[in-house]
Image (cartoon, rainbow, N blue to C red; front, side):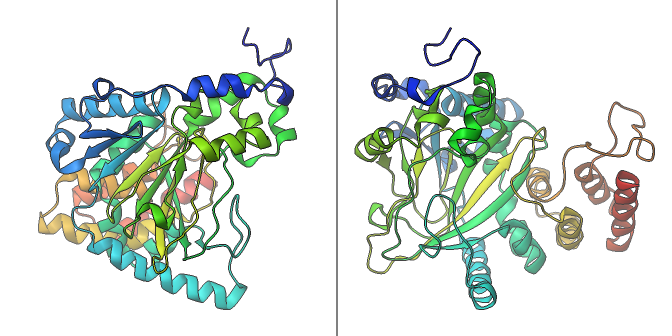
Amino acid sequence: MDQHVNSDGYFEAQSCSLRDFKEIVSRRLSPSDVPHADRVDADIPIYEIAAIEHLLSADEGRRRLMTEWARVLKDGSGALVLSGAYSDTSPLDKAAAVFQQIILEEKASTGGGADHFAAAGANDRVWNSLQKLCLREPDVFASCFSNVAIDAVCEAWLGPNYQMTSQVNLVRPGGAAQQAHRDYHLGFQTAETCAGYPAHVHDLSPVMTLQGAIAHTDMPVESGPTKLLPFSQLYRPGYMAYRQEEFSDFFETACVQLPLRKGDALFFNPALFHAAGENKSNNIQRLANLLQVSSAFCRAMETLDRQAMCNALYPVLLEKSRAGTWPWARFEAAVSACAEGYSFPTNLDTDPPIGGLAPETQKQLFLKSLEEGRSREAFAEALEAQARRRSA
């Protein structure tokens, strides 16, 4: 039995060992472990998307990349960077303008929201930025989330039909750093609550979520990009340990920070010890859209009106489909970020599985409607009928 697990199969805070933790994070990532990476920087593999884009468009190549990314996130350093994930960053600028406007509106109405692992007011947050962007500017949403590289890394960790949510984080000059932490699910519970879950649930929690951040601005180290501690996701009782002062102190001495350019995307295992850094710059408004991507099999962190999002996005994608300017993979990526991809929970009396083991999903209906060229009105009717079947 693991020395950190008691005889009943639970982790105890007093059993956490900083010595064991230090030994785990002393590992190093070899370039031979990540053959598709352009380079390894501070044990974090950097993937130049322009160099591997051809692999993403081929089934076999995409699967190889996904296998490598999953291995990095699970058993490797726990984080990776997609450099140049957006070769055209103009959609990110348009989205940033929307987010800035939302921040102004929400601060005027409520004074701004609180933050995870940082004091309220230390930065600006836009909760549920995914839905807010989709409903306000569906064409911008389509451009931002039709990204095949981001779609692939989400699927690599979570499998198909993942659930996308996102929250904007704007850290202004002088903005304070976060405390070192792990993330959703168990990372958002108290130490007492975590102690009530058996050890095997601690092992399960990280594979239910993927953390990501899309850089909407250049992020030199002085602006405080995310601090990461490679390999720390491998420490099994980490949800008990990260709250302990000796672990957080060690994190500050051992963590690494990578500069990001606008259009880069960082992804990491939610069990990796990490924290947003302090913005020590004089004039950089560090803006990132933080992706909280969930397995179809778990509860996502935010509730979204995905039916409204689908209705807003559909005419944009229908126009692009009729124009014939996008490969199908871009449509699949955009719809995956918008629509519900899982059949359950549903009302099986009114929404029974027909011709298979599970009822049709919102995502399947969306893509089928695009392929058939259904009108906006016909799609809206079909979407509403599906919603009534699921909830009747």
